[in-house]
Image 1 (spheres, rainbow, N blue to C red):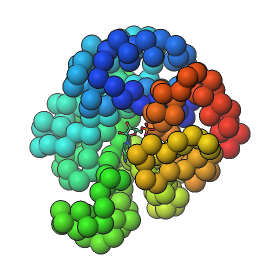
Image 2 (cartoon, helix red, strand yellow):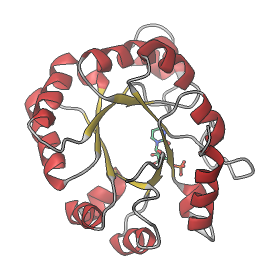
Image 3 (spheres, rainbow, N blue to C red):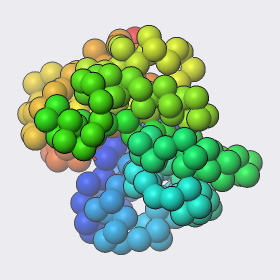
Amino acid sequence: MNDSKIIIALDCSDAGTALSFALQLDPEKCRLKVGKELFTSVGPKLVERFVGLGFDVFLDLKFHDIPNTVAKACTAAAELGVWMVNVHASGGRSMLNAAREALDQFEQKPLLIGVTVLTSLSATEIHEIGLEGTPEQAVHRLALLAQSSGLDGVVCSPLETAMLRETCGDNFLLVTPGVRPAGSGQDDQARIMTPEDAIRNGSDYLVIGRPITQAPDPVAVLDSITESIRFI
Ligand code: C5P
């Protein structure tokens, strides 16, 4: 059984590169994230291929549309056999309920995760789009909306994890990007945390891209991160 907390972000636009990278990995020791770049470039066949190889796939397409459209998109994702799918919590309660109901039709249903406030948004931009309060208040409000709409968890910055764990309790998944092992580069991530600290603060899953995908020996980096969080 796969009990890995590490989701590797396959951020590229080429099926061959993504597949040859994945073929180095043991599907029992990690999970894979396919986002908008790879999905838009190569389509669902690659997702089906990963699922066929035994990988748990997080389809990170952040659906945000009218309830009927999001429900159908979630159904299509579930039919691909993905393990996790996400939607914007700011799509509103009806949209979140529609996504929940669509996935509940499946025996093997993907986990349904909400995006609260994109961590790339500054306080000024958050104000400009009309969200009230501080960024933290908006994250808090949208996480509670996601939880009360039956979602399984939210994506959050490592700096929000402790607050959300406290607010949402133990049975709500926190999926955290912006994770950097000690000593690795920050890339373009503004607010980072080590895998150990992110797990200590309450993360369930760590989304890690470049520190693993760009490493000379990705499997060694994956193994060492896995080892660093094994007993936390
Ligand atoms: O390479 P790196 O570890 O920075 O990749 C992080 C992944 O998590 C990327 O796929 C990025 O799009 C995603 N992500 C993020 N910050 C968010 C939401 C998603 O870095 N707030």
